[in-house]
Each structure stands twice: as C-alpha cells, then as structure tokens.
Length: 183
Image 1 (cartoon, rainbow, N blue to C red):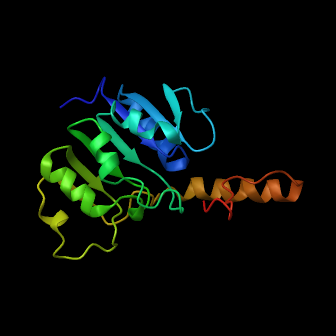
Image 2 (cartoon, one colour; image 1 turned 90 degrees about the horizontal axis):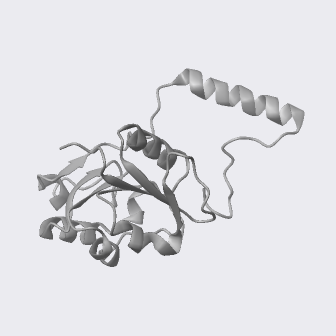
C-alpha cells in the first residue's frame, strides 16, 4: 500500500510529533495536526487544529500518530469515543505516552476493524503483560519503547553546547520543560 496522498493526523505537535509530520510530508502524505495552544506549525503541516477539533480531524485521517505528553488533560484522551469518531479503518501509531490511550477501548476498536491496525511503541500498562490480547493480534506491532531513542550523539552534543552558550549569554534555552504544563 502506498501512503502518498493519504492523510496523517499528528496529535501533539512537539518534537516527536513534528518529526513524524516531517517524515510523513516527505512521503507525500497530507499532514494535519493538533496543538493545545495555537494554530502555528511548520509549513509541511497543511492544517493545525486546536484540541477541540480532535474528533473532527480524526474522522479525516488514514493514519493517526499520538505524540502527546502525559498530563491530566491527555490521560485517557484516546478512548472509545475517540476511536468511534476516527475514520473507519484508520491506523494508530502511538509514540507518545501509553496512558493517553485507553487500552481496552483500543483493543475493542481493533477487534471491530474501526481501527485497522496499530503500531505501539508505548502501552498502558508498560511493560505490557505477556498474556495481554494485544500480543496476539495480527494487526498490531509492538516495539519496546524505543521510538525516541536517538543514537545521534553529535546532535545531542550540539544541543548541549548551544544551551550552554545560551545560558552563559543569558538567552532562552532550547527544549525547556514547563513543570506546570507537565512537558
């Protein structure tokens, strides 16, 4: 199956979400996304919706990438109502946090075909028990929480050096976590 021309919804347009969107655009996919705070996004994302548009955007997506952080607002966000609103036969890719997905609701959506398949780098619970139904499903790929592991040490060192330079100059740092937001 070619993904060119298919629509990918990226839920959570931070670092991981933007990386997924960039790769999807390079594969000639139509990329839409959501953000909590604004409609701003990179030029390779055709439309950035706000959190309240999640169900409407899910109904248009052939592929859904969950790149959400875990906060009180995102815990259990992808539940039975979300999966019912999603385009029939969409695929879910979870590289965010496991507890953002209600696992039993995902299993039910996979069993009915509402969600055609899932690639799960994170699950809830994690690790997933060996007797969990997801392990037996032919339409599910499970990886061991490795999607964010970047072996590009040169890039990490460049970021560290840039943040040290910025700190010494009194400039804003890159990749700062906001404790109030939780990410």
